[in-house]
Length: 138
Length: 138
Length: 138
Image 1 (cartoon, rainbow over the protein chains, first blue to last red):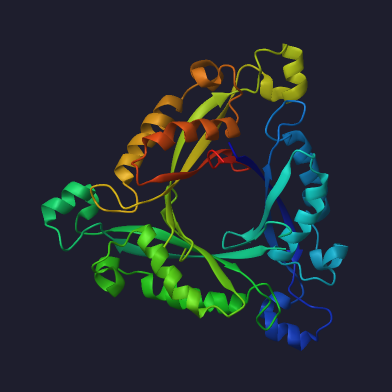
Image 2: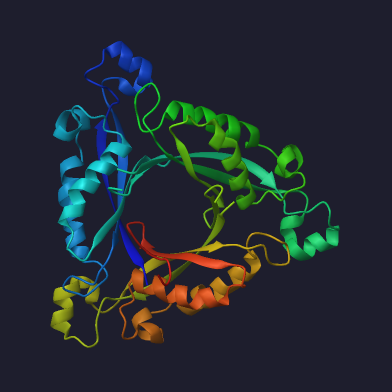
């Protein structure tokens, strides 16, 4: 039966919606107060959906120990407590929106899964009213 | 990469499950106490999933300012605080169930999005145990 | 319009990750403390998504009264308060993971729906960080 497993991790990070190639005024016009310094914080959730093959030492759908290690190394450790526009090289020139972060995590996590597992979706939410889903290359 | 953005808005409304073309008795048999006056209330959530094209003044996946304006005008303002069976012309003869509301919102929101954006899904929940998803015309 | 309805029920149950055909040591190596006695508990949620046909006495998308009866008989009553590895014959030799439980519920619920309704998905979560989705035979 086609079955997937979804694991969610959380982190707190700061960001602002500010394009460095634009003037302060143009940023303010496009994004309002969301462009201001100091940046504002979000409790992010990142939910990763994996389609298994049997794999891992315990012959489960997905090797959860491996998945948790990947999520810690690719999501929680590099992002928790950071000011994304300043501290993450991938987001100094790209706006750190939910959708950009979902695509970034997809690209980082997919190649690290064991060959039997497939990454189906990465969902990033910044608060209970907004999330982005990335389902990978078409 | 195929990416969507989902925005959720909330409102409180009253409804009852009562078909005006049926007798009180037949309504009671079909719906039990849910057919009674006075109506009962729900804290509804409406989650709208949009597939972008680049668009909007800030060149984001979805023009969130535009989406929020549409959701305010089509969902929150007309529905918040209303007795749906009595106050909403669309639901005086159609039962205001989650599924009927999801279809109604889909029809209202889809034509208002900018041409590059596609409405993928409208989800309406009336409480943590029940929601309906409408994915639009087949 | 293609519309689905999703109902969620909840139950509390105990389990451990322990394969009786393995030694205690091999279980401990594979699953760590999750293999230990006494078992540990989870507040499970089971969310069932049904695509309707018109049906049921009230001519709704889905006959909710029928669906709630099936969920009570197949999910809540047999699982609530149980030690899954010991009390549920289906899980004395199969690990009671979210993914195994989602597949089990799918097989039990699908044939009991009325002919116009289709079971689209069963989601089982054991806590806010982990869930499995079963979408039925390919």
